[in-house]
Image (cartoon, rainbow, N blue to C red):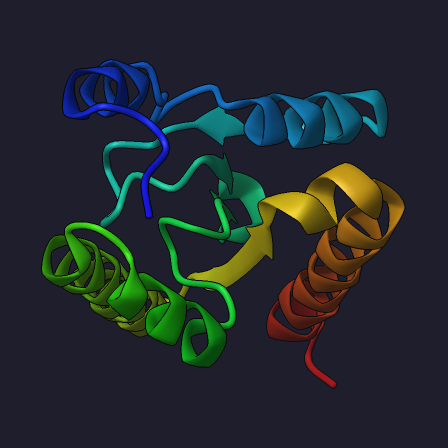
Length: 150
């Protein structure tokens, strides 16, 4: 059940950002501090990834747990009990489908896709950086093998 009036909920929803969210800024600052250069909201790629490291063809998405349906099997039954359940289930289901479609398009184009949940970025930024660095390391090895052979 929603504790807010319809007008209060509408006002809240209007203030939810789609760009430069706290989790994106946190991850970008950490990457910059480590010396990695990137582009943000790269419109040349499907889905406009939040962070793109073009040199290594890495697309990074910082996903909020609610809107991208983390633990969907748990969240969906909770939504079914709430107000406007049909709307939210359809919206989040479509977001999840779109995320999958974008991932497939990027993979087909030769990009590596990394998706982090917001709470993982907030609580385990070092682990997120480690994942990105491992992908960069793998890309460097592939680039070296392409140039010099095995």
